Amino acid sequence: MKSAVIVFPGSNCDRDVKVALAASAGADPLMVWHRETEFPKVDLIVVPGGFSYGDYLRAGSMAANSPAMVETVARANAGVPVLGICNGFQILCESGLLPGALMRNAGLRFVCHDVWLRVGTSDSFFTQGYQQDQIVRIPIAHHDGNYVADDATLAALEEDGRIAFRYCDETGAVTEESNPNGSANNIAGILSDSRTVLGMMPHPERLADRDLGGTDGQALFDTLVDTLAA
Image 1 (cartoon, rainbow, N blue to C red):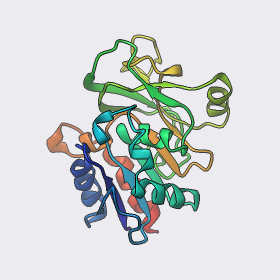
Image 2: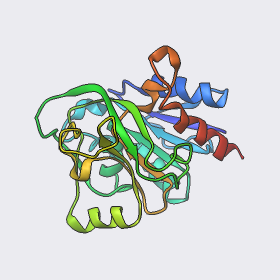
Image 3: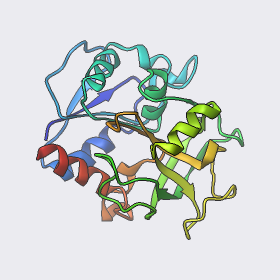
Image 4: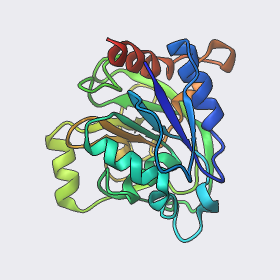
């Protein structure tokens, strides 16, 4: 399985994703600088976390118009799976690959700690390594993670089973107290109409090795490798 990680000025999780992908795939991903207008054919593209372009104007807005993202959008529209994590989720929304937007956290504070997530669906390249309603622990680290969308979009996400992850408590209860940023419907990650694009605020690459304190994020990368290498 061949993969690529898009790297922007301000990316700070590109190497973390590289390590996680390499551990699952047995080969390093291609690291693509944001100015590149083209890159070799790959089976998966990852848009990593960080603060692309310093979050100027609006988180992800400048990165969404970079040459590498123009190519990423074209490939996503052609069916290549794309994973966006944290700032990557923001970029995917800004680029139109996913609906809605990520706004400032409800508490107007940067949040950085582990959270519990309930898996909303196992019907995707990204989540089929989990069981629906499985509870996993994944770290978050963001200031603009408050997912918002209009009522029609939220209803469509619910009806189509495209909410990949929701914030919950340790028992799996989806509560206001377990929502770290105010996201609508406790949304932590969503899928595109085609289910080939996933955006999520939590960082699975930061909990994909026992030396990091847990492996709940590893299933996502292992599943991608097994599925896309088949």
